[in-house]
Image: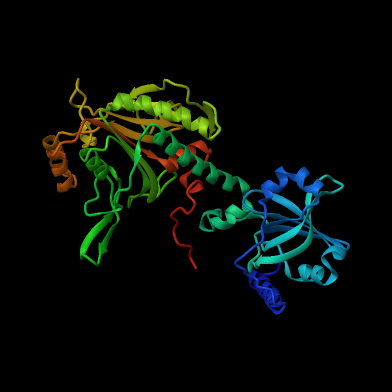
Length: 441
């Protein structure tokens, strides 16, 4: 991008080139492509393709162009890798060669047909015998994305952040792998994945302020769920013994490094299990998860080493100050035995009814998991919700009266877990489109 040229002028120039492409009777936005291989496949099988002299077709976004005498080199990338393209006048023809130079720019998507070869410097390259436009870009890519004065633009225009920063793309690939691996672990353990309502008449399952909306068809107010808990417990009543859900939850509260108004939660419930059994299960999940995403027992997070070797230490809730004792919670730690009054949906401990049979997993100073032995006494549950002036879901309370087996459950914040395992300092780094204040015009 020319430093002194305004975006409006650059866009105007690109629009002219778009018209040139149209006048040549080429479609600047075709639906079909003749792609035969991914760039990654071409690079992995380079010797085979280059020796066979067979033409292949690769596609991708142009990232750089440099003219060198009667030849032009470019780098282009698809979702799997980057390769060099080589254009020569006497191979593609003078007219097409000039057409390419006059109308193609960085940011455009291109299809190149040709043979693979090694340059004198040993760079794997496709020599173009033919090419076509796949999508003409009308705005130029930023030259120095990390040099932007307004760093929040990275989050506002995540698409540019992903184009310009491969490390960001890699983080989101790891996040996807985390979710995929968790599913594989739970499915292997014969947990059943379910879906429950996001629009709920009563926002239960967590002490959080909900978002409110109105359903015109039935003329009723509804709320975006703050948690799926009460519906998942209905399924325990219905006979499912091992269930989980991965989905979005919504809380109309503050925004900071570890809170976003909409976030992804994994909630799991296991009939005939208790808190202690669930903590052992969590330790096993992390062992498999870290292995599944290609990590060992020790990870780095914000300059600190965190060792997930089991067993993890346990600290009573009364012995910790979450504001002052962050350093005590860097290594994986189960915080246990919370006051019963702040956990209205949990069973009380058998040996001390003042405390809930609950745990929180904290690592890197971040709360990752909250779990407990579930309260299944319908009379006590009703009394506790009434006493604490909490929102009462009469249908849920009635469901409990039909009988819910003893069970334990937990919720994992997928965004926080992903931030920890990708060494991201805030959720905005690991949520593709975090909630942002609108930019002032």
